[in-house]
Image 1 (tube, one colour):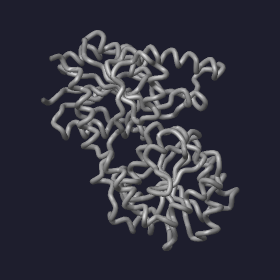
Image 2: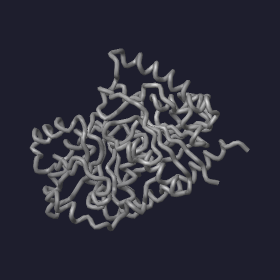
Image 3: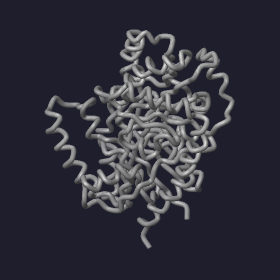
Image 4: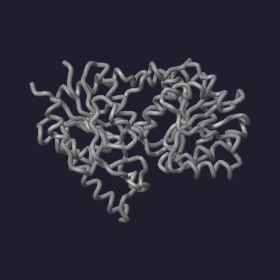
Length: 383
């Protein structure tokens, strides 16, 4: 039975982050399974809303503490639009204003409401609090809000087992909590792609390539990876770190690389088109991330699908996918020396880790995860 699904999201193009990638992947996979999908997202002057099919953009304003993030704070006609579209299920990917709109629409139309919990919002307050109040007080208010919000959802999807345990402790009364990761496209991200041009572009000269992909922002903890390169270069003098992404901490990280004397060892690639990303993963020897902010590290799954070992922070959802010594290595996210050791271990055992890395990703293929999502939707349909 095909369904008509409305995805509500606080983050959307042209912003590039894990939530946006998850929304796009969910939409694409559901459509590939024969469902009709409509996306409700905040408007943005640059998001091409005049040409995007089945996407409804709602009037929004910018959020100053987090550039690229927009707030759909204005009243709209979502309820009538949903009714006209004859939607079967509302699936929210945010707990901000779009999540509230989705929950309100569900109440008004009696359409079942599913929530995927993506971001450790409590942690984000440390970096992007919109008001000058005590972090402890704000976290207490946020916990109350999340308990009420999640308790009103018909189903809640956690992306990892760790997050499911946290959500159950936060909101004991919430309904039908299941673990369903966002699937990775294992046909798009795979070993053996033609990637020599990436190494040529960044002048790797046959040396080892370590890759980092993600928004360059404080919560990604990139300075730890930069500092670790000092130790890595002692063992592999020609090794280079290629940093893919942009963000508010870019200039600070460039300055840090200069202070560390690593200008020749670190390449800031900036924004890389989506179609080129698989080649970047395929070109590297190791993927590295020190982020403590990852509920569901999609970049880690993409690297594993590409057959590349991952040196990752032992934090958030990363340890659920990276097994130390088998498909990568874990390290204390506050320890640059530990990060270097993890990168060196992954470089040393890279060839033997490739098969295990790929096998891990196949367990989280987009097709398998989409079938689990369909099961959740169908349990909410009237009999």
